[in-house]
Image (cartoon, rainbow, N blue to C red; front, side, top):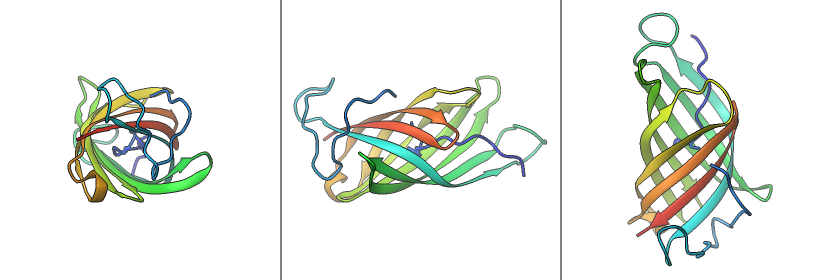
Length: 164
């Protein structure tokens, strides 16, 4: 297997996902700061640390359609672990250097699911945005987006903008 650099939810959503952040808000004490979408938007800032990672090289050797990056992360705020998450990113276009990513963030009050396109990581920082597609618990009616920036192969900063 060939190693593909990680997109943190990504993170996926993820992962990555995975953009510049200000002071960290507590995931369990939502920041009700009016974001770009106005009063009621919850902004959650997370430091993402990838703990497990694998790549799956399918088809032709090297980067090819269908190759996957799969990972599991811990999320931190002010050095304190506040959640976990997983991501899967699949190469969907060599011409456009794109991957399709699905990610789940698991926080104290529920899960947030994410999906969207993310670019290949060829240098750092790499920025991406994923759409919030739903959630559980407090986030069961969640909508919005997550901005992310991959700082290096195993760390990202995530800013999750939750609206309902």
